[in-house]
Image 1 (tube, rainbow over the protein chains, first blue to last red):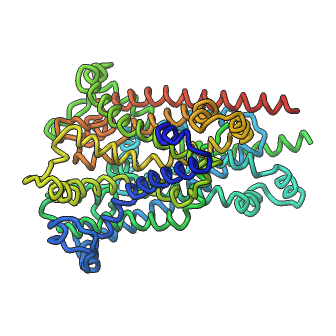
Image 2 (tube, helix red, strand yellow; image 1 turned 30 degrees about the horizontal axis):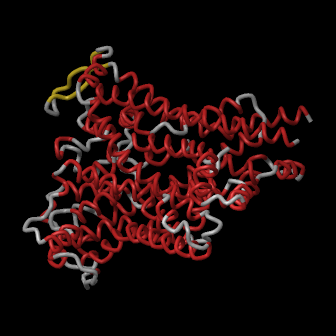
Image 3 (cartoon, rainbow over the protein chains, first blue to last red; image 1 turned 30 degrees about the vertical axis):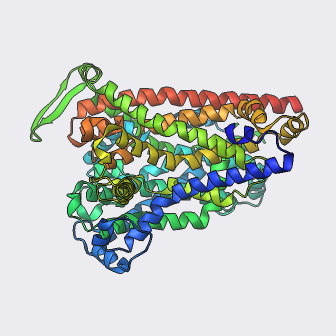
Length: 291
Length: 308
């Protein structure tokens, strides 16, 4: 860290600042390119026929985009479109359930005074970091006994209990949900449930948006649990298909199609991210400022 | 007034019920059943003949500790640290640049780009890097044209190049996240501290070590522990890169990949014991975070009280 700074230690202040600024921008730009490079390569190779890709890498795009796209969509083993649909359904519902019920739980603990309030809060904080994999065995066995293998229910409904989302909502409420509002709604004769749905939820919109995106993305990218539960070809999610492509006899593949399949599972989320990046980055920063 | 607050208490239970019911059914019951299974011998021989379930006490644990457990924990830790050390270094560097009042860098686009790999599906990231570094992939074609080598370098047949690629992906996926978190922490520092240090003639290196680092120490510890817990769960990237972990003598097989292997082959006794060990390690790390949060909460409350 000290190197770029000490090297110019003796020079006058403004010159020194200019040099430091240039060094910073050069290093930052290098990392920006490093972060983007894989995606640039991906997008370029998505447009090329397999033969050109194997010949070596060049930055010139080809004209095989639609052909590669059709190859991927028509591949009977990969079933890219149905897994795209499955991923959308699962991730969308997961994001909805997780944010709604986390907000509801956080609201209850924030607003109501009840005996178990403190123990509940402490309990959720304690379990927040426990990885889901530790109970995967019991989970898979239980879902089998319920007859829910190859069903989306075990991938969606557990999202109701999302400790990390809950914690974020609770933090947000502490900073921007005054209790007077609830009191005022009561005086106006609003029921508790209606108050939450029509008055509180709109106030929580920024927090819900951030958490909905995070939950959607992590569900979209989830591989471990779906791979253990889903075996039906028509029920697969995108990460399972990616793993399937990887484990098959790789050399035989049309490489343009492989890049296209990766692209289809990456690019929708990347676009959504780029559109909403301002909120997302603010959200990460919010989550970071604890205590 | 008092009666009012009593009558509202039931809503506390009604609103929290779905969360706790879901937690009970989908997390707690499976966790207990996982622990219970760890004391049984229960597996398939050649995929057909069922052995057990027979009560075997701690035999599964014993087998794990005498067999490969150490190796897979070691692999996990190595992969994690190979990614984490450069990650914390560059994140600190970038966070201090981004927040430097004198530099006044334009940071918006960098933050967005740095964080981008984090939202990308880890399995797809793994697949993408596998294709890029594969025998006839772009990296090898560049490598061959520069060095003039006859044959491509087999990145996935060597221990350290394979580990290096996995860690590179982990680094790319997480350094943006850490940078933003550290930035938020640094932005929370009272700017007058920097101003007075500047007036006293402190250079940027001195202000970094004497002001920034001590004041963001809690969040640094937080980042370290959360990333250890995250590293413990490492699965998607190495699973895809190594195609299930068997390649190069299982030198990149992580704990969760090992768990996945047992779950897949329906060796429930071993999978259970492994889960319990994982649970204990993650539990200890979680408790550290919990205590850390508590401590900073306590400090905050004291401060508030003092002001009043």
